Length: 236
Ligand SMILES: [Ca+2]
Image 1 (spheres, rainbow, N blue to C red):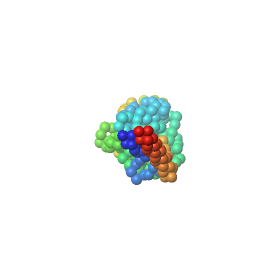
Image 2 (cartoon, helix red, strand yellow; image 1 turned 135 degrees about the vertical axis):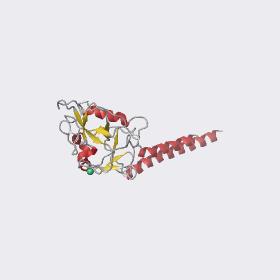
Image 3 (cartoon, protein in one colour; image 1 turned 90 degrees about the vertical axis):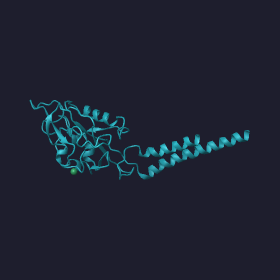
């Protein structure tokens, strides 16, 4: 029984090298971002970006989410105080690819994200379910295609007169309308785009090092077990 326990421990140790969602085609040595569109919908009336980050973080960590073990999620959106491209400055200035939760590549880099098109639409939610044709097909963004706030149509109750509108993106689009399709009332309920913090790849030698360490622990445990057995048989 103890042996099964030790083997299970080894299995868990090896498995922990792949704990974070790894898109098909990538290896644990790769660094990348993940992105999803929220399953639930929200108004865009909060004024500070942190409030939206909290909403997408809560969506990511829901039971059944494919990324429930990953924290540090941020909304792709703009307020009166910060543009999306600056809120995600590490993404914007970085050269790491962005993948969705169905292993579709969205962009090769920050520059590719803000150049007016994406490789695949953002239709997958945190459960890896394609929401095309289901519920709202729009996401609150407040953002133009280059990642800056769209005029005064950003998140929050801004001074844009009676309009009170926010820029919205089309979750089924791959042209610039993925983030900047049209304007709608801020109080309307729509989805949010969420992007992870950078998932840093573990170089293969380091991964092997972890594996070797796990195997060493297992070997020591086996050895100790055998010694205890021998000791007991001598006493008898
Ligand atoms: Ca692009």
